[in-house]
Each structure stands twice: as C-alpha cells, then as structure tokens.
Image: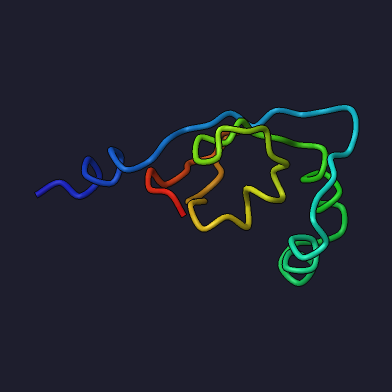
Length: 85
C-alpha cells in the first residue's frame, strides 16, 4: 500500500507571494507565533501572503501558518489540508 499517494490527494498547493508592505495580522496570531519563530522571521512572514483555498481570500502568511489546515511550507509553496476548519 502506498501511503504517499493517499496523502497527496488531501492537500492543496498554494504559492507564497511577497509584498513590499507589511500586512495587518491579528494580535492573537502574533502572540501565538512569538515563542515559535524569531523576530526577523516574523517580520518576513508579515510581508508574505497567500491566496487561501479554505477561506478563498488573501491572507498574511503568519495567519496561514497558525491555521489548522496548514501542513507544511517547502520551496515557496504552502501545502494546505483539503478539509475546512
């Protein structure tokens, strides 16, 4: 049984895009990230955004990272779970 093919069907791939300006992030999301990532990384995350397949809106990557559907980020792409939170 091939487990890799069954998990690939339950994920969506979304490109991470960079903005020249910082996006607003809710304070509770920033507080949740402060112990996990460093200050420079958090500043970079505030400048990145994704077209969220779950909410069908443009969201800051910091919000995406704290989402329950977030699976992983690899090479400028975010892998997102198919189901809605």
